[in-house]
Image 1 (cartoon, rainbow over the protein chains, first blue to last red):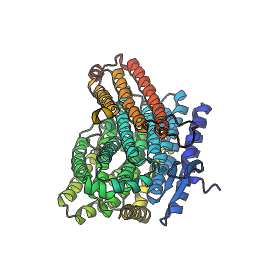
Image 2 (cartoon, rainbow over the protein chains, first blue to last red; image 1 turned 180 degrees about the horizontal axis):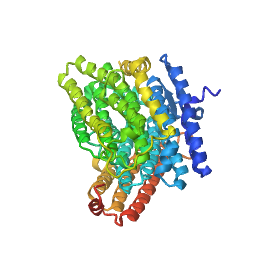
Image 3 (tube, helix red, strand yellow; image 1 turned 135 degrees about the vertical axis):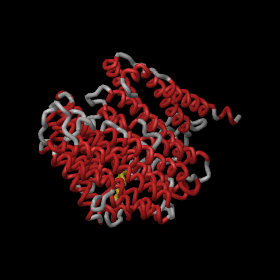
Image 4 (cartoon, rainbow over the protein chains, first blue to last red; image 1 turned 120 degrees about the vertical axis):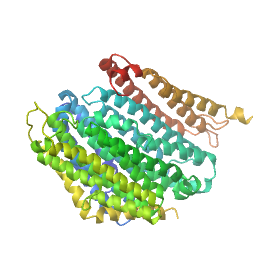
Length: 493
Length: 117
């Protein structure tokens, strides 16, 4: 009974718990509810992944209305895999959120912050699980609206302008997306993704379909911060409260990327997207240029949060490279990196959040010598950084390895060289922080600070441990990502 | 005749481009929200236009075989309107907070005060 309804519960639980947090109107009970719900969500997504691991697909008709008339939730391997990473990140970050948020925002805003985080979580999980194009838009807006509000909670006044800028660009992106969905509905008369995919095959040379494709990909590219549509991202990540930054960096752009993969590969199909529309001609150069430019820009950032934000745009570029290659290996590399990047950026931003908790702001000058006072936090940062660079035994190595082999499979040496060069640039920008934190003196006149409290350290180290664990025991991520990628290609042939 | 038959779509694209232009070109934060609203409204019209069946009536209880317009796009747009209202409300709330924090809602003046936006 309950097992049958798990796909619905995955989204409905956080959605219902959100107003409950609001009604509790006190910070700590709201946090406890949010944490409990995020753990339940993790349990549900583990069970779901277990059920579909063998390649079966769960179809859940909402309210008993059969698809394509009703709204359908579909859990296949790809969806279950992304659900797992989103709910894993949420489950690790919710316990961390209490201490970190209560040091950064007013006490009376805390229940609101947890309400927003649950709403955002519900929206993100919904985007992944839904099988209906219009439903995806609604859930996209649920997650985006709560994200705008969460960003504006930052203590710097620039968080307000960052949230405003993101609201404008995000809404344009979402509106582009529904224009595309509307055009497809006009053409096919359906909104169900599986149904759309079937009907599109016969309509491939219609101009309406091509326009819809353009609107949907550009709209989603805005949401996932594809270079050069990433302009909202650095400010939003820099000025949002630390835990919000960590949560968004690890989940929001990944889910938008998932939506892009869904539309390009499942709905439109590889034949239309690559052989008829040649999306790779647009995606590959932009991703390559974006990786290089944002990596270089990251080196020159003073604020370490902003540095990691630029690095995130570069990492999204890697995932787009894999999508643009249109091979099974390339897509596997994208999916593996989607999972791994969530782990590494989550760990890095949580470690940075712990530093912010003690010293207020994360400028590189203020962080000088901090490793002496906060050895465990900075050690977590170093391991996360190594993973970002792609050192063996970490998850980052696996991503880079797959991306390189995908590039070489196609004989694209310049692209392989680009991946290596930008990894070296990552050494430079992570190295700057390590050099400052370990080898410089504490700035004159600053008091020694204590190590971060255990509630902040434990979640950080859980993610660091996940970086190492999945770097060595890669069968789960590689197996599921590989199967899902092969399925996406097999489904259209 | 084709051009006239596509009258609705011409209006849609005129509004869409007007709204989009206002969002990009105006420096006033409230004007940008207004532009965003015009932009979204054009999409509402796009959906509603496509639901219209020539000669069709409203889809309420009808005699068998009566021609009626497709109600689904209208329902979708009700949802999109709600989303649009929420976005506008949140955007304006942010503008109020920006006015409190900066004392202005002009983009270039905010930019002069600190390097954001």
